[in-house]
Image 1 (cartoon, rainbow, N blue to C red):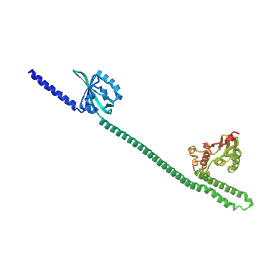
Image 2: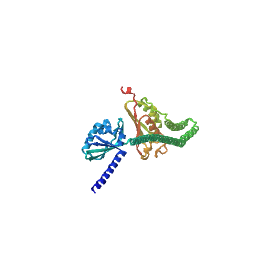
Image 3: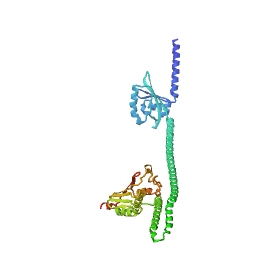
Image 4: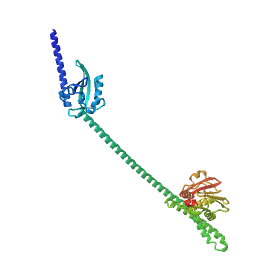
Length: 422
């Protein structure tokens, strides 16, 4: 009975050994067994195939024989450290591992370690897999990803470029639309101006033309010498009507030149005090009965300004002061000048400007509601503002109903540099 049991046990052991031997020899992984000293004691056929060695060439050699020389020095320390406390684990976590063939060539591997003990001592079995094809596939995937990233970057760049081009095109369209809108607005303003011109011209021209016609007809009736006073009265009425017509035409001509950009400020040297006194003498003929212009000048007399533009500004402001003031009222005209600025103040004791109208007083064709039957085109103050802007100056005013209006004009004195040093 005892011999029978031994025989059965022997057969089982033999079968287990045969199975293990078959697994060792036919495994698809390379198997390398080393002892605690790191010496190779055994390897299977797949390992010999992977590394290109025979058993005789490897058995008894250190495991570092199968490791690239650039890593073998450090591997000794890693191996000794592992053998101090061996355990089943994979090698090189998150690292690329390489093995060295007999001909010195290298290939990427994946390695797992498993320690075991026998009656002959402690050993470690290494399972080695050649992952060359896997690495090639990974590299192809990486290259494909890089190519995709490159294509994405190119696509993003193209999209950005197209976006910029589209934004530029939209901006140009918007600018074109704005230009068209400005042109249409300008055209509407021009048409409106023409319409207003026709309306105002037909109204404003009718009165002086009727005056001229009637006075001219009446003059013919006064043939006698003693009727000279009556003739002169109608001659004066004709002169006044012609002056009104001339002012209206001058206003429209000035607006036309401003619209076309044909008006420029050209400063010249002028004796401002004499210039203003001459202008006062010229405008006195417009004054109503017992109206007086009080002139005060302070500062340097020689200034650099555009005389024609300044004349138009002063003539307009003074004629308005006369026009909107009652007979017997005074107009105060004062100037202060230095090498930097010329400050002008024109004050009347007239009807004043309603507070509700003051914000629009410089608008084209605007006339205050209390202007009544006083002749005017509503262009004078608009022209004044444009001329002052051209001269680089500023205009403002203060007004009170029934007490009068004060206009303030401040103009730069364009004295040449060498004159300032004199």
